[in-house]
Image 1 (cartoon, one colour):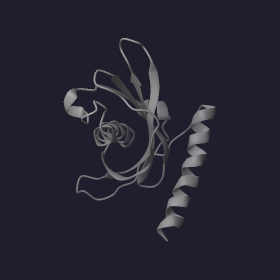
Image 2: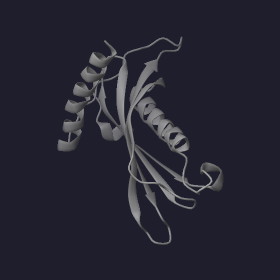
Image 3: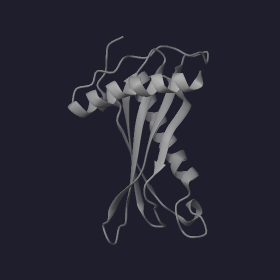
Image 4: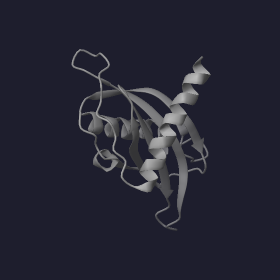
Length: 154
């Protein structure tokens, strides 16, 4: 399989925080945000693999700031590395208050997806060919994160 640039499958998803998305304080529910992130990451993985992909794990979900009713949430998902049948997707989210124009990083996480064939079995995916300095750093760190996860499981 021919290697693909991360930019070919990058996804940008936008949501507006509505009252049903929040807790009694009007703050975006963490689970709702993770759901939106998972959808963006899945689309990114499927775009890269050109196959249906399923979530295998979510690592390091770090909430840095909150979002409130009316904020616009921007979710960026980009593949960092593909292994044999799995892919690591980095997802970062920002909130923007429309009135004040303040923009904050609210969350970052790494998602791992596996690609499935037509029979629902894991199947191989194309490798990633990083081009920029940042893509190369993410690519190299993805292997370290995978090794750490494997060591923890043992």
